[in-house]
Image (tube, rainbow, N blue to C red; front, top):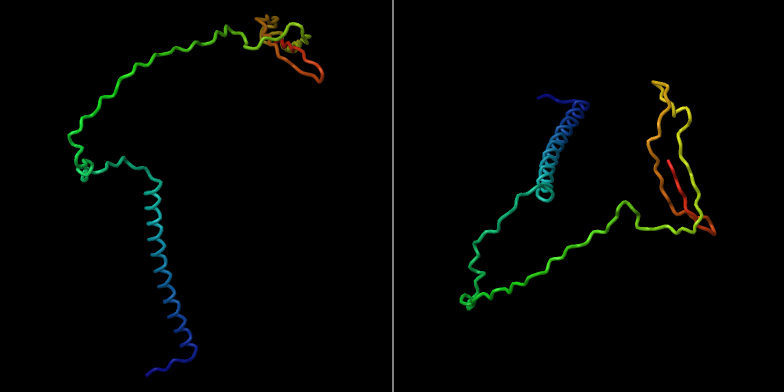
Length: 151
């Protein structure tokens, strides 16, 4: 018979305790993996894509109630519906709102600087192709006016 000393007994019991805890950890890891798989399956069932499911016709005879087999279906009366065509408003490039003629007009001209009016490659003066003018109703406390913006 071999006798173990106190430190050897302590080491042995600690090793046994570590082995028992390792077994518990391994069992819990397996349970975690299983629960994660279940969670993924439930997510797919609830939120995943599904194809259309067809209800089986096993109980289709149940829809036929006694006494109703020989009833004739009434034909639905056909009604003719008069078709309508909606008239589109004529815009012709004009706004819906017309501004009154008696309001004062303040003109603002938006222009490019003089150094940009000359072509940098040729040195020739650039030609203005056209202007764009817009009219807006503006408000100052106590009065209204028309703001004409030319560019």
